[in-house]
Length: 115
Length: 115
Image 1: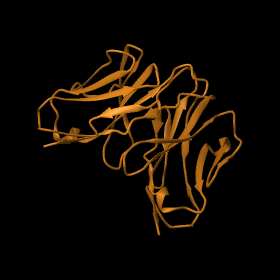
Image 2: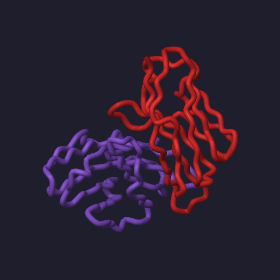
Image 3: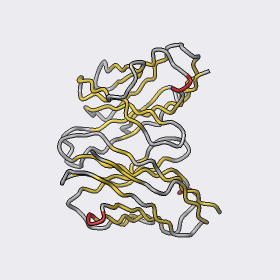
């Protein structure tokens, strides 16, 4: 089945130690998104890629970076995780031009713990 | 600017009760899409429905139904004969309809269905 895959599902890192979360998709969608979701809050968009074009949200800290080496993969790099970065990170995809209107398909998420 | 308000933070019902989750939105666009997503404890956001702004016809899917009223800018979601498996956080979201655009989420409503 076509899907959005996130690895790992659970990630533990130490304060200040760089960490990379990965997302892959078999949907061949041209848009990929990264969201941060803290406990009892709505998902907050960090950035998204439209093909290779990177679009950063204005309030996304510089500590968060992303890479998209090809259509299928997208990575979220947290350069120096702080305790406040502990959250669920959700990857999503969508297909521009989809007349059905920007339905986003979400992965299962990676829960990041910062010690 | 777009905004989605889910005034109900948490709702508790007993199995087999009907429950309605409220969603009120704000947008200056005349063409837009509204969504409902379900987030069970596992964390993955599951797409439930999409509705475009020109289609005010209510929709029923099994025990789920949606009432879209442009006059009150509301897109409410009703679960009939609730079940324990319906326990989750439900998010209402809004996006522009032109091309692709990002989703604006409400803060979510946690639904607890007890046996």
